[in-house]
Length: 170
Length: 170
DNA sequence: GTCATCACTGGTCACCTTGTCCAGTGGCAC
DNA sequence: GTGCCACTGGACAAGGTGACCAGTGATGAC
Image (cartoon, rainbow over the protein chains, first blue to last red):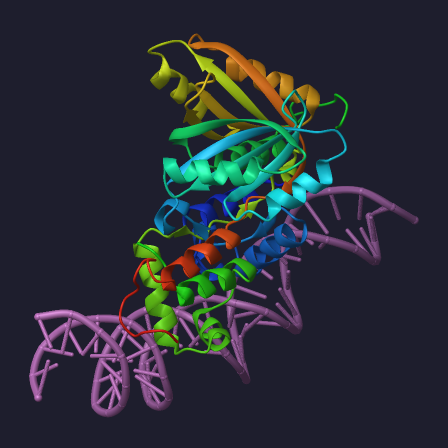
């Protein structure tokens, strides 16, 4: 849908102070409350803002170890493997990818030892041929969106700002 | 810090309906408003809830392509590489890991063609020796936390699990 | 040139939630 | 038993929310 500068500033503001209200946001942005309300509604219904889910830290609830596992899947077993992985609570995220690994998933565990249990559970399934795991040591850039939002908002009001896309879609 | 069943239910509720208020949450959970307020405060100050940032969909603001890049870093260049990657808006996340790759980052781009530009920018840096990229095709399990929360909450009231504060079960 | 459309402004309104008190109750450790 | 703690259920003032409305300026169509 695309966003303009005001949308960008609003998103930044929400990212900085998520519990901010519409009224306070309108004050900070220097626009009328109705404007912020309308923009927010548009961003939500347009799918830009998926929600305001609580950002829960797995480490704080007893899962301090994070790892990424690349999985190689037996031909034709994709659906089963997806269902299997979705049933494991420690699998926080799963992607199917190009390349030699067929899937990439994010895991958490209670300890390095516990990670072994999780991995065993993940790969202990018919359709998974091979798995290679990388344990996360540090997270220099935690999941973020503000820099991208800023760039997207600027692209909107610079003539020709949309970066050389043009290439084929997926 | 550990969470009990009530915390777990509260977190689930917040994940389902993030804009829910304290009052409404207390009604749903069948407890007094003050209780929910106190729990929420404890979860936030205890670091379980990092925040309520808006969940922005990169695809909706013009970046529909996601990829994961595994980077190999020249010895001793870690800090520089981290700073470099942090300066690229399309880098949404960066981890340092064990294993043959030294870093793993999540990228987005405006198109497959644009991904080339992003990758060039990412790897066009002294300290990066080699990069291998996997483009995400599908995301069968989007980043989620509820199953883990549920498991953590149950662990708390099973003998041998973490002990919750007074008050007892509800 | 004129008109309709659209977003934004600045205002009002009733309703409800929030934050913050309070006293009272029951489980638990000492 | 006594103190501590969490939870309950109630109260209060303050303020925000969602819903309206008329007026204004820019844009694009006729």
